[in-house]
Image 1 (tube, rainbow, N blue to C red):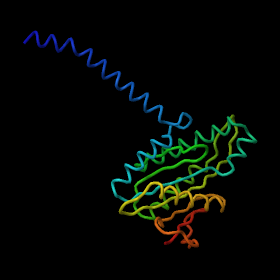
Image 2 (image 1 turned 60 degrees about the horizontal axis):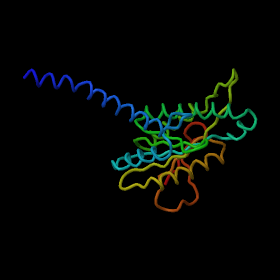
Image 3 (image 1 turned 60 degrees about the vertical axis):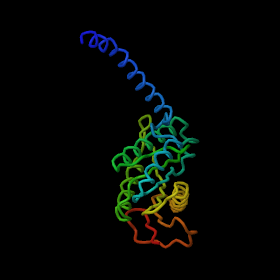
Amino acid sequence: MSHTMTALSAGLPLVSGWSAHSLWMRRRIDAARRDPLTGLWTRDPFEERARKSLSRKCQRAVLVLDLNRFKEINDILGHAAGDAVIRETGQRLGRWAEEHAGVAGRLGGDEFAAIIPGYGIDKLSADLFMLTGRLDQPVPFEGHPIEVHASIGAAYYRKGTADLSTLLRRADEQMYKAKQHGGGWRITHRLTVPEMATVNGRRDGRRGTREVA
């Protein structure tokens, strides 16, 4: 018995060492799959997690957003200011997504995406109103505020089989429509038919519209 205990005791440092090494490797791999500027998932790992979320066949909302006049910030204030805006936008979106049991990612440039559980159009409208308010807060840079405005498109998915590519495309279409109207957010739940002329529902807060299908 004593020999067995001695052997087990001798093996503990080795097991502990392997565990620490595995944890270190997982963290290295995890870090490599995150955007270094914002800490969000990059495109591929975001899409992996989004597809896993959709596989649960529950209501979901997929969001695509980007920043209005971002090129002007880079051109006039410089790339350091642009990086500050991207960093703060990503962190704000990431915190919002976590609060809503969702996942966020940076698709590239000033384009971001997120997926959250859906609890109805009215709840999603209220959530997007809150998100727009956060993202539109000025970003401090070298003692001065940079004015920031985002355009958000959301594709709302109720039940059945959903294809992430379709949801992202529909959300992207709504994002561009919001951008054409100066920013804010738009929602669609038309996922499988070509989109006809938009029928707008009630205004919900500033610049936000709800599409009724």
